[in-house]
Image (cartoon, rainbow, N blue to C red; front, top):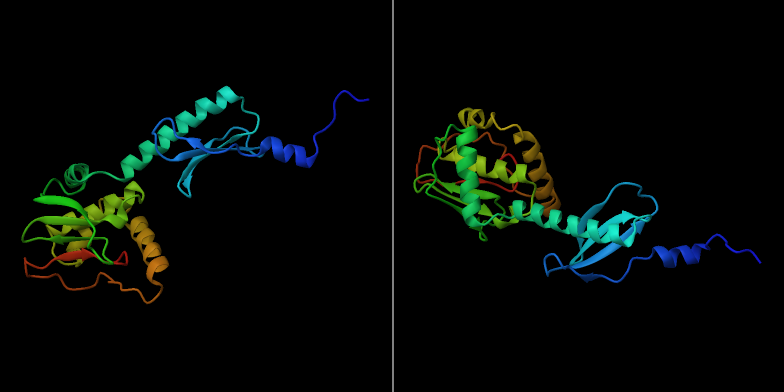
Length: 220
């Protein structure tokens, strides 16, 4: 009788099956599910799925390596989400930094905070009051997209409309076009082709009380 044999497909499936999800020891929050893959040789990745954290690792990892990398990836994912979901105070601090870096510190809002009543808008600015509101739907989007929305509203403190002078102010930010495309994709997925959009060709408003907004499309 042979002393060893190749595992059958069913046996391999049982061996490589993901273990039951366990509580996230690092955060005390979402469950953690480990998925081993024979197609992975060096890479480890993590993401959120259906209320749990999924960590994909190479099938060859030992249990010790699994514990090490699960802890590392859970913390890395949490840190990434913290950066993408700043508090009101962090949002205001980021706006100050962006104004300094790209607008010479000329845009100085009186307040910057998240808002749940922006409707289809990504954000809004009331120049007469110096207030900026960012839709909570932007929370979780890539950092460079949030930065664009903040800069868009900060620029309205300097240029109320969407004329040439407005877009000239935004030229210093390297991700403007990419972020506008990202937001247009989000708007299309949500509203379809009939969703509202602003092509950015409107005349600048001379009324300091007008609230300027980042609309559902990126060209607002």
